[in-house]
Length: 245
Image (cartoon, rainbow, N blue to C red; front, side, top):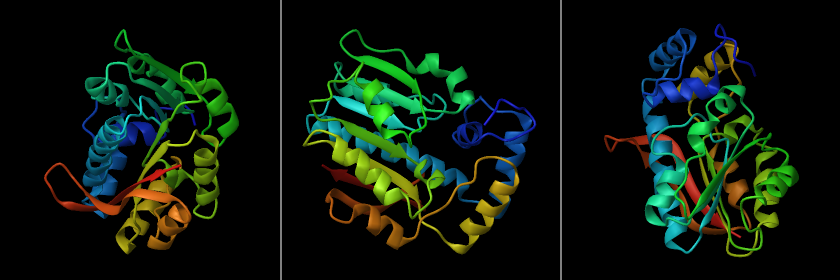
């Protein structure tokens, strides 16, 4: 990944879908192409953002005060720490991403209430051990933690995802949570994803129902897999669930 203005960035593309301002003309063209192939693409981004708010509210409501946001993406108000600290001012949030586009804007993720804390880790989320070790600078790794994995697991091969999700859950203290949001595949989404990959940006793989089931297998599901709504209340192909360790 690079800051090349002639190649679309997945972070800028997603930011553009959410009406953010951090994008180049090449990202806008990709948005236009995706909307032509799959007109509901903005709804996917909106549904993911709504589910993030729902998941943060859920875990904070169940006593968790520590969050790791994997694949954080570009700052988009309200950010995860703002959602969490609006409910609990002492909430502590660690953002993880390895996109230089995101790193360039990471300062916007480092604001915090005086009672809480935020941090940003420039680490590949595949490196679980390093993520958790460095998150320990900000979080108490002996207390429950909630992981937010919003619409970035599609960068992980379906056959690898259950093990990766499980590895994170198994490494967290008892009573921790993992909130997951991703796209359920269908023919038009597959066509759009092929064109998306052809643009030169990082490819994205939508999931089947069976993929979601394998991820949740053997885990305590506290919020079952459900279709998510965009901001206009329309059902999307974006699905979310929440697991507990």
